[in-house]
Length: 116
Image (tube, rainbow, N blue to C red; front, side):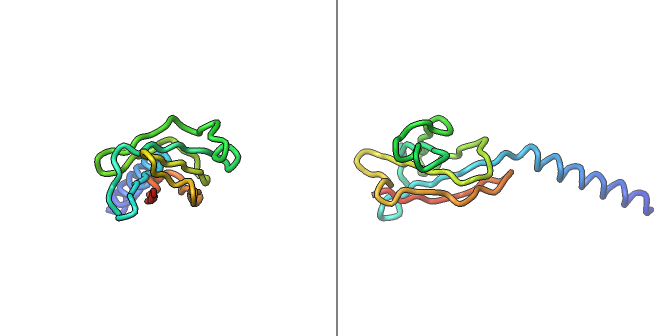
């Protein structure tokens, strides 16, 4: 009976380890307007440092665009902070800018950005 418990425990541990390796670090961004409504079609450019963010050069990943719910998921990132430039028409986050916290590895990190 104890042997069966040991086998089950080992199987659970193996599944937990393999799922952590499968899950990549991602960032789910929800873009909202000043009233809190989701913004469809906003473009998001991701930079790894302040210098590139300010110069709008060397993006970390290709530009992403929000869906009808104002959301987009950016995948295969490193566990570090990023700078985000969000634009839709004449609205953006440039005044305040946006730097994420250090992303948690192997998780979907979620943030909301308000554009004005």
